[in-house]
Amino acid sequence: MKAPYYVTLSVLLLFQFKIFAQQPNVLIIYTDDHRYSGVHALGGMDVKTPNIDQLAYDGISFTNTYLMGAFSGATCIPSRAMLLSGKDVFHLKGKGYVIPEQHQTIGEVFKNAGYYTHIVGKWHQDKKALHRSFNSGASIMGLGTYLVDHFRMPFWDWDETGTFENTNAYLISYDDKGKRYRRAITAEDKKGPFGTEKDGPHTSKVFAENASHFISNYDKQQPFLMYLAFHAPHDPRQAPKSYKDQYPEPEVTLPPSYLPQHPFDNGHMYLRDEKLAPWPRTKAVSQKHLSDYYAAITHLDTQIGYVIKSLKESGKYENTLIVFAGDSGLAVGNHGLIGKQNIYDEDGIHVPFILSGGAIKTKGKQIDNFTYIHDIFPTICDIANIKKPTDIQGKSLLPIMNEQQKLTRTSTYHAYRQFQRAYRKGDFKLIEYVRAKNFDKNKGEYYTGSRVTQLFNIKKDPWETQDLSFFPGYAELIKTLQAAMKSKAVALGDKKENIPGEQYDFWDFYE
Image (cartoon, rainbow, N blue to C red; front, side, top):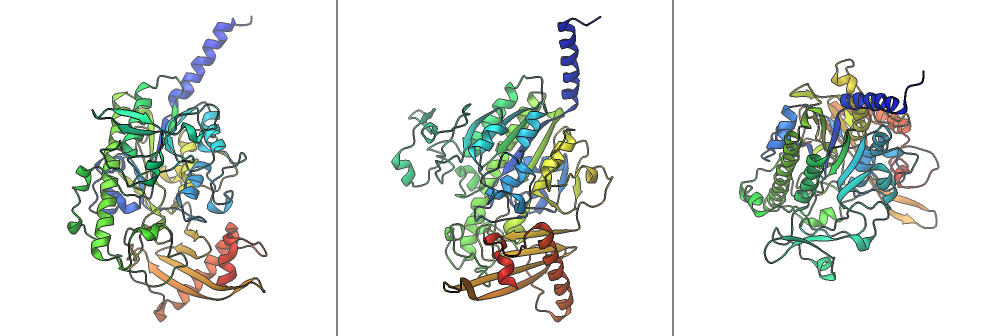
């Protein structure tokens, strides 16, 4: 006898609920220009991050997670594309701004598996990818209208049509009585100067409030995936005065790799990020930037604390996987640099990555395996028991976490535009630079330039202060690493014959 419709439906719903009950909510917290040592529990620096530290104590920290590289000075664009698609930098479309339909995003995969997907914060990719990845969103930024100001940042509400017109962007300001209100963006706003906490709420606060509101009011049966993408601690390194006051500039300790100026032209020395401070970068200049950086991070940490509190108060914490990661490193005075357009560890590619929340039962564990940002996607899929795309380059870290496997990879490879390449194997890291000059229009080629080689023992010298490349005793090691780097370039698709474009130009100049 055929079961009545309502009985069949009830069984299906019960079955569906059981599946969902076994799958965790997923909260991805992605921060901007947040280097590994920008978390106190990880790097041991003077920055105060009690809430992120607690995530590390309550979960699993990956101590060797890296951005593979970028073919854009705005490294956060490819970084976010890699996180969202699981693709490595050589398999992105162009520089990563567009995520084509054939590249499934985290949001799409989880939405197709029955999750409710929601975004809060920064979006650096195309609007079509945004619209197909999430069911809803709040206080989205970065969709066209942009002010370099954390206190006066344009936001968008979720747009069901996916158009996110510039005319729909708004600012949040305070009236005479200190009450918030929305207002249109004016020409005066675009002129500056930077705002302060008197002009409006900080981006980190806005994002945290909207994320907390979503969590506290979420009442659907299916689990959710939230992508909470903060803009901090990206410049301008702004924070409320009470946070800045925690880091008096003369008292800020500079890292071991501080230099007033980089020792040579790395190929891309004069660009937006590097113009944020004068040359030479005196100790006072670097202390100011680091003080501002730490203040923005500590303010960010407080907002993350509010979001975690909302998980606990709503009863959702125990069944939530919290993923915390940064999108790139940042120099802030290291090696005489200010930005992230390089492939030194802390200055450009070494990022924090923590898995925590009630869904992670292992507490306070550190994993030293070489990992990339694009490994996060397949790892989350495996933890949530969701089928991951078969065409991604990222590797699931769940076998490492469960101690079923010892290594994911034995080396890492990094690229920054056509200027820099790095290869890490064991304790040692090789960095190679090329700088071409004087383009011959008749021949269509560069006819002069320079090459620089660096070698660091990262195990003994994590801040990369002692270049070993000129010591005779390391000559054979350098040759071995150079050969391995070239082989890896071929395997990854970084080195191709007769294909124009900066993605491949490095090897033309290098050889």
